[in-house]
Image (cartoon, rainbow, N blue to C red; front, side):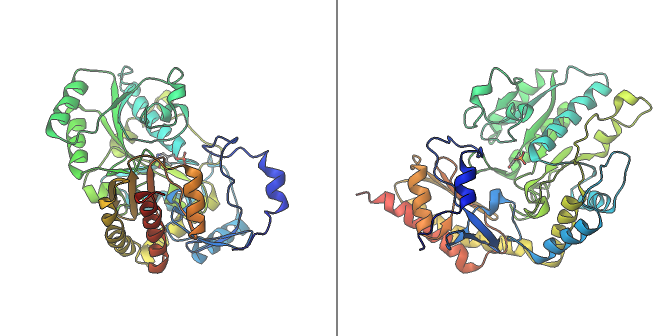
Length: 426
Ligand SMILES: *Cc1c(COP(=O)(O)O)cnc(C)c1O
């Protein structure tokens, strides 16, 4: 391992840049990365790290995939960006029709934005305005679930888990929603149904299907989604799936909706949409939602329009990423990763520091009884040649689907080493 000093830009920028989710006074120094390739990050001081997180689970084809790189370059030469207001361009239009084809049921109407949080806000806005347009303005609130994470903006904070989340401080500033336990049993379902039936102010139910990600990597059964579909249909409210984490293969099928065979009224995609190259998100609505805006009344239009919506390079990256899902065996790779994560991580369940092990598709999580000091973990993982960034007491892997077998083993071995070290302290 080299001991070379970080570069000048690192020292100059460090006090100017405000990093995400960090107490800057005590946070560990970030790792200066010079370049990326496949599942690896190369640091400025000459180290090579196997990346277990794939940049918040976005880089599903690995970094620098040549097909995505060349499609973005080609688009860059032609036209980097034009606004979507009053203008049409091929990349956005092609992407919209491809997403409509991939999304289940009659989810055929695609609204682009540039981040997941905004795309969830757009979904919430669609649901609320649908009811307004129909003469039910009282239907303006959402049911969401403990353990959920839907973004960091004000409306999305209101539907995150208020305790697990990072947003407790804002409780006085955000709209109150109905955050409830996931209906995993018949009794919980009945209780939720009773609750929802007793209110007339609910616009819809919002959930991350099958896998709640940033709130702690919690996995639930498909029955939860089937029950929620039933509940929403019965009460005639909307079911909103936030597939920003689960979309594009993470749970083993293109969308978790496909795997669970449940069709929501609105599906939100982001994160891996561009294969981790550029920021882009999509809110995909059903015929019924779309028709609720389609009228002779200008006030019935959806009043939203991010400046960079449908950016041509972002859409070119997403189209290229979808090409790769068609041309390369991504879902088979996810199935292989699932098998390997299961056999490598399940045995850790026996160790005393471990509370639970959860694997679904290309996601493996080891939840500890108590969190380990992040500084210690980070240092140990770097020593072991891997980049892994736990969420509180949850050490998880969301690797690229193209990760080599040996690289995946290096990641699971590193987790095993760290957990075993805690099992026999001193
Ligand atoms: C990351 C994430 C978001 C927020 O997306 P941003 O692009 O960070 O705004 C919302 N929902 C889920 C499930 C996510 O994983």
